[in-house]
Image (cartoon, rainbow over all chains, first blue to last red):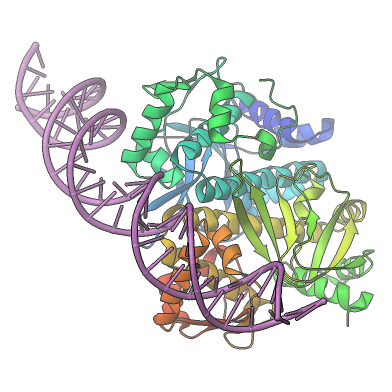
Length: 246
Length: 246
DNA sequence: CGAGTACTTGACACGTTTCAACATCCGTGG
DNA sequence: CCACGGATGTTGAAACGTGTCAAGTACTCG
């Protein structure tokens, strides 16, 4: 299922969803040496302070970036899903400023920075695709600042769920509006800057309003328009090429 | 004072602080066609939804990115200071997801995307410098998510002040620990996700603790170590080449 | 002199956190 | 097979940080 071919196939699919690559670009991507690893849940992939020599490609599972603040609170900065290249940044920023951990069992492919820098030098289209990818990441961080800084609990949680569902749908991993979401309420709390208890009450409110159904790591959006409205969600910031066909 | 030469001089200074450029790179940057404009305070440079054909370089003054949420709250996403290239991103993300406005009178130089894409294609070092610049922006957004999401008012404001002072010092616009900060308390509130009233009380508390002195848009940090501690501030995320000589 | 903007203050309301207890599920070892 | 511990989710009550409202001060500029 994840032979070298299907690995680069997934990578090409991702890059093609972001930019336009020609035949030679695709061949160069196809030749990238990937090193496959399987990880359990709750394992660090790279840590704050590390100076890694490679970046990773998430083939399956879910991961997240986070920081620990002085008082011991953990702030989740973003969720990463299948098809993401979470730490492309490390090819140009020597020291990591946050930690990337798995949330569920993950299959990960590593690529040496050397190989990435080489393909960027030789295939400008590929370099631009990578750059554009990191710019979309930045756009998502911007939206999170706005989400955490200016929405109340209900909107904050609804907005986050809208983002996750949109992104999961975009990579084809949702069946209509049902998707796997291996995220605990505590993790949702760390991502939204709320307490676990309050996230729990907020989810109950979303359920009572018949917007979502969430059980056993499986989220179903019952009322997409309603959830978007509750979360004040506008997908522009995700910069998807094909506007989501919702 | 801002002849074409000194304009590209400032730009070269910025890029050299971020990456290593050779002679030919510098010549290419020097030849970039810049279009100078002076703006008053509180003017939009580019707006959410725009699809601009050019990016800008901030020669003097202060600007900020922000988003307006559904309920009418304004969330400031970042502050931009002299020497910054705030909207490099727009060369690869067609539609802007937020608005860039001046906070004070600003001198701005515009560069057509065409010219930027051209220099990126011909001078990979320059492209990498631009890319790295946008990655540092992203690192700052990440830190803001953590700041707004997981610190209380006092730490939040202190952290923001630490960041601003560090960045202003890095471009040589501070005299020891005194710098111009043309930011109102309302703007600080929009940046930290607090109310104006509470920012006011928080600043009073910082003053009472003899950490800062702030009057008439001029900030003096009286106790840098103390302010860093109050804001739980670690400058790693700014990814400065020369660690700040504090 | 008047109007506008930024800052300041006090009292109260509200959203969210904290604490503590309890329920439920699941895998593991006895 | 059942008992157990640990992680996850749920609930209620009280405490706390921050927001809101409303009034007032200080300063700048025309």
